[in-house]
Structures are given as structure tokens and as C-alpha cells.
Length: 182
Image (cartoon, rainbow, N blue to C red; front, side):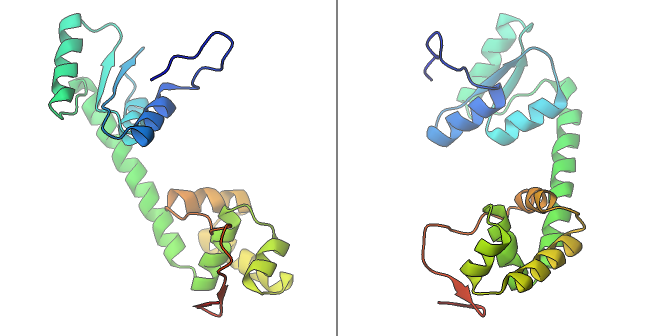
């Protein structure tokens, strides 16, 4: 990984850096050298693709053992962190499951409207894209907010992203009309 030159912006945080490394070079394994043991941050690091977590104040012997283990495709966490990390991962999964259940309650058209919302399209753009009147789009958006149990488009988009809903493809000309591709 390239180190920023003086005057360049450094990475915002280590977890983003881990995710970037895993995206760009999936074969590269990473170990987080952390200031302190934090179950929430450790869980986020694992989700981003880290293979290990060690505190900066660990012994050189411990650091080398973790690196050797990671090179053998093992995942390493301090035993004291394991319960907290598992709790964090379980809570994240439960939250995602609730989001997925709410999204599954939407009709196919409401899902398409939600995907347009995730893409950042406004009511008029959604209406043009889906060949609907702005009034009909407003009704669909209100239904989406109600079924998801949120009060704003931003909250609906956040819930949709947690449930794994991606944005509608804005590059193609294929548009859904009446449940069929046009």
C-alpha cells in the first residue's frame, strides 16, 4: 500500500483502509494494529476484511504469532475481545434481518421506487424513469416510508442499504414498465 506524500490526504481511518485493500487486492491479508481493544471497531474491521486484531502494546512475540497465523489463513482476535465481537456481529445481523423483513413487505413497484430513492432520484425523476405521474410516485414514496416505519427519505435509504438494497442502474435505458422490462 502506498504511503501518502507530505501534503496529501491520509486515509480517514484504518477500517476504510482495510476495506479498500480487500477490494483492490482480495488476496492481501490485513492485521489491524489498534491503540486499544474495542469490540465494536474489531467487529467492523473483521467485516471489512481484516484477518487479525492486535493491540499496539502487545509483545513482539504476540504480534509475530498473529502474523504467522494470518499467513496460515487463520483469523486472530484477543480472547478478551471475542465475546464482545460476537455480540456486535450478532446485533448487526439481527438489525439487518429486521431491515430485510421490512423491505420484503414492499410491492415490486415500491421496491423499484425505493431503489430510485437509494440512487438519489427525486420524485420527478422517478416519475419520468418509471413512466408514472409525480402524484403516483408521491403515493408510492409515502407507502414505502409507512411500510418501513420511517419518517424521511434519508431514513428509508439508510434502512434499504442495511438490507442490501442497491440503487437502480442509472446508466442503462432499460426501464421497468408494468412489471415487465421495456
